[in-house]
Structures are given as structure tokens and as C-alpha cells.
Image (tube, rainbow, N blue to C red; front, side, top):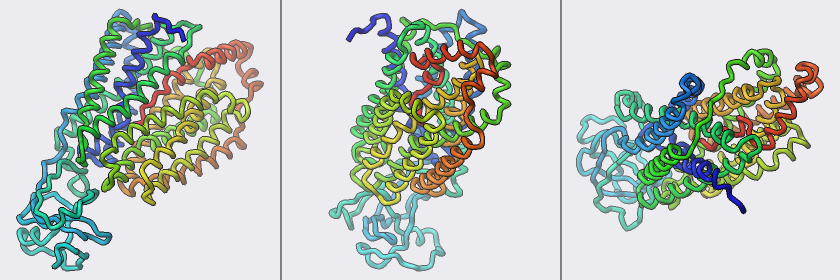
Length: 546
């Protein structure tokens, strides 16, 4: 195997860039809940950051074109902001004060049994869930005594604080213990209090700046790669190093987090932030010394040729299904990390949960590449629209698999088996979207149409999935989220089949009549781009599941 030494810095840049983001970007929603934010609020914050990308990403590209002599500085500044923002989340403390309670450990709490602490003194306010203390402190049963408390002190001492998600040894029952709650999720009436905490606004600012810088840097990375390798170069051989970095650093950082956290339910993310910082600084220094930044091309002049396409109902329906495709993808691939954490509580899996979540990223990356390689085989036999229908059908199976795993308490590793469906869902689904959008593009405007399609998938679709999925998860829980997702995916599958009957895909002859003789030249150009992997959408297919 021969490696071009001139392209080695580009390969290392891709590895460090995606390896730096891998320990943080997919876990932003998990980190947010660890800090104390509800899943719904964290999902809304991520959705807002994705929508901000729609406005700020083109603005940064326009600034780069307006000041060509400062283009390199802008790129390095974007990388630096990304690294500084993501790694600085490590300094955001958990929201709310630390809560402690001392007392006797007892067993048999609640309807299904469990452990709890009978306080010897009035504990700090804010602990839950409280159960009435029965006569027997060891074999506890649910008591229907009056909930009304006449005296605060007496009421607190006659309540038992249930320990949820903790696997307690039998030897500790009836022992005097001290429980320290180092973190928790804000819920109920007090949830609004997070708006007054500086930790919330610090996390929000770092999340937005890191996500926007990450998304912007992706586009610049692809422009750098295309300019460096030339028109006859192999883009895929460079981009695959980013996949290596993303797929390897996730499990590595997860293993280090579990090792540093020990048996604690509250995980220490310091190793992940250190991996992000070290690889990020390495990437900034590497880019500053070896990477040449090309001129960023804007598509403003091509919008006029795209306007007729935007007025076609067929294209608008296509964009709507692209948005739903992206929403299903982010719900299945990112929110499953939250459900894995919930499933692991109270089991031995909790000591290795971050490794399992890292392996989830590895499975997702490992299954995508083979299906991307055989996409053309499916497209030739089924067509882009039928491949998309197939993907929606697979999302139904994928959602039901996750829902069943959470509802019936299946072993945690079954979620990794279900996530193997990410290969055809993303590998076929996104690529089919890229290919179809290239076929319907007016001559000379393929890049603009690709950008619009990618905007629908990775901005509007991801934002819809994080916002809606986060709300449903907070209200109903993980299993119900995926049940609802399966129902919506099934309806989308049916509607997509109906849309092909009502509005058949535009054929080549129709397109040739619409755009004239230049269509043949544009088709040959698009075929070359697909083979070399240089389409804008292909360059944007980064694993940022979030």
C-alpha cells in the first residue's frame, strides 16, 4: 500500500478533527442531563444551535470571500473556537447545590421493592422520592398513611428517601450511611429555576459556539480536501481517516470515563474533555503549519437558476421527506444514548456505560461504510425513491427494536445489535438523497441544490428530531419515544409510497426537455462527482449525532 506523503497532513487533520469532536458532540445531550438539565431542555438547546447554523454558516463563508487575505486566519479561528468551546464545558459545575442525607439503610421500598434511607435528622430539601416509613425498617411495605405533614421536622423524620437506580449489597441493609447526591435532573415546578443559574447560560453559550464552529469547519475541511487532491484525486481515501478518528475516539474516551468514575452513578467526563483538548490543539497546530485554505465558493449567483425548482411541488415534497429522514436518524442514533443510561441504572452495566455508548458510535460508523459502498447497486435496481422507502421501513424496525429493549428490560447490548441498522438507514438513506438531488438539479446548480438538501437533512431534520424527541422522552420516557417514532415512521413509509404514485419521480427525458442540451454535460459532470465522492452532501456526511 502506497501513501502519498503530500496528503499525509490532510489525513492527520481529518483524524484529529473528528477524533476531537467524537468524545463530546454525540454526547452533548447526555452531558446536559448529567449537569442537571431535563432531556427536553437539552434537546431544545441543540435544536436551536442547529438552526443558528443555517444563518451563521453562510455568513462565515461570505466573510471569508470578502477578506481573502484573512481566509486562513478565519479557518484557524473556527477550529480554535470549536476546541475551546467543547473542552471548556468541563469547567461547568453541576446545577443546584449538593444534597446530603444521613440515616439507616432499609430495603423494600415502594410497590416493587427497593432501597431507601430513613433520615436520623432533617435532611437537605430537594431529595426525592419520599415514602412513608412503616413499622418494620427492614421489610418495608407501601403504607397508605396520610400524606399531610403537620410539622416540617417531624414530617421529614417520618419519611424515607428512596434510592433509585442503585444496586445495594445485602450486607449494607440496616447500616448507618451518609448519602451524597452529586447531581440530578431538574424536574417539576422547580425546573424553571435553571434560567437563573449561570451554569445553564454558560453551558448554552459553549454548546452553541462549539456546534456552530464544528459545522462550519466541516464545510471548510471538504473545500480544503477537494482543492488539495485535485479533480482526479480520491476524496474517500482522505475522508475515511475522519471516520477512523470518530469511531475510535468514542470507545476510547468512554473506557477512560468509566475507569476514572469507578462505581459512581455520576460520571467524570474529564478524560473525554482532555482527549478533545489534546487532539484539538494538535489539529490547530497541524492546520496552521501544513494546511492550505482554498477560496470558499458561494452559490448566491446560482440561486436564480434554482428558483424554478423551488416552485415545483415535487421538490418541496422531496425536501419534506428529507427533513423526516434526518429527524428519524438523530432520534435513533443520539437519544438512544440517554435510554442506554436509564437502562443501565441499578445494574452492573452502569460501571461500563460510557464504554458501551462509545461502542455504539463504533457500531454506527462501522456499519455505514459498507452500505455506502454498495449504494449504487441498490440505486440501479430499485431507484433512489424506492431505496428511500426501504429506509423508512427500516426505521420502523429500528425504532421498535429500541422501544422493546427499553420496555422489556432486555440486556443493554441488544441496543448495539439494533444500531447495526444504522448502516442501511444512514448509509443508504443519505446517499440516495444526495444522488436524487443531483439528478434533479438544473445545469450548473448542483452544488446549490446539494447544499439545500443537506440543510434539510442535517439542520432542519436534526433540529426537529432533537426538539420533538427530547419533549417526548421527558414526558413519556425512552420506550414510548421509540414506539411513537415507529408509528410516525410507518406513516411516513406509507405516505412516501403514495407520493410516488401521485407525483412520480422526474425522468431523464423530462429533465432533458426542461433544461435543454446542457443537461447531458451536467449529467456527465455529476457522474464524475459521484464516483469521486466530491459532492457537497458526500463531504458533509459526518457522524455528529448528537
